Image (cartoon, rainbow, N blue to C red):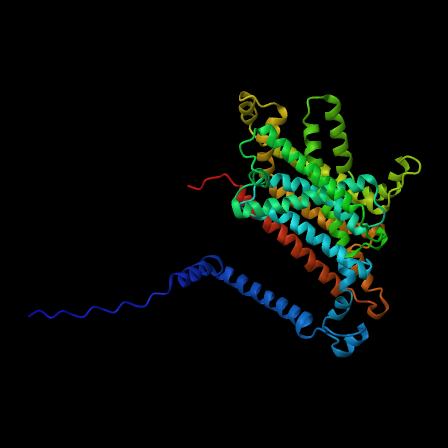
Length: 442
């Protein structure tokens, strides 16, 4: 009778994830003795850095104190975050009246409400929502922030902004629950689904005009107290300048890029000269010129405050840089795309708006977002010409008598704020790239 020897018990294998991590570390970190030495040294440097920052910024830091001297009395080696905490309102809002801060917060809420439909997948006509936000929200937010008397033009634009905000919100609600659009919902609600397209169009225009009229009459009866632009500051002012710059620089860059590629010599030469003029000088020079020379070219009696001058300078400067980015994207599109569009009867603007420009902008998303990030960070230069943006407020902490000499903590706090904002913009742009990508993986 044959004796069957027992099978040897196989050794326990490590989990796949563990084997993968160990293999990756061997390949990339400890492949050779020299690489192992570099890895150990690098990890030691990282440990020293993290431990030092943790000890100074958290473990030994002072969070509650009335003066910098009290911070030293509690912990002489730790960070004095109490000064930053005491100045938080100024860092975020500048010298904006504290009893009117609800206006800034409400303006931010309105912007979020306006832009929220862009992130809802079932909502249609998102391009029109974005365009209304770019061209109408600044008027509503501008009056909400500055207040004072309203001229007839401002009243019309505010009315249009309120109607568009309400319409976009209703359109988003209809899209989320039904997958349709607000015009379709209104036509069905009125029982005009069988009417001709022209009749439906006229009905929608009548509803729009009626809403504008009612909102115009309603807004005539309310106003908010005026707040001088000199009291604007902090992160609020930084976001206002960069937000307006971002919203207007891209459309301006598209116009300048198309002008530089125009077949009309006058338009091409003027666009090229304008672009090269602004791209050949630093932003700080443009800001100084805007605040000193720009008023000289205005008609007598026409006065613009320094904030408006700075915003115009930032918009023009960044529009010129974006023009070259857009032009590079247009040149990357094969000529066959335009020829195919012409073959189906599309003219210049139809070809550019429906075929060429969407492809060019999709390819240029990283460069465009990079320019936007640069614009956000470059707005700190306005502190040199007397505007107390976030950098100006952070530097003012060290000149405040109770916190005299407090430099490192405010600047580090500002750096963390900028990092969070820029990182969020970068991650969203990456997500947008993936969403709009048309490449196919094998």
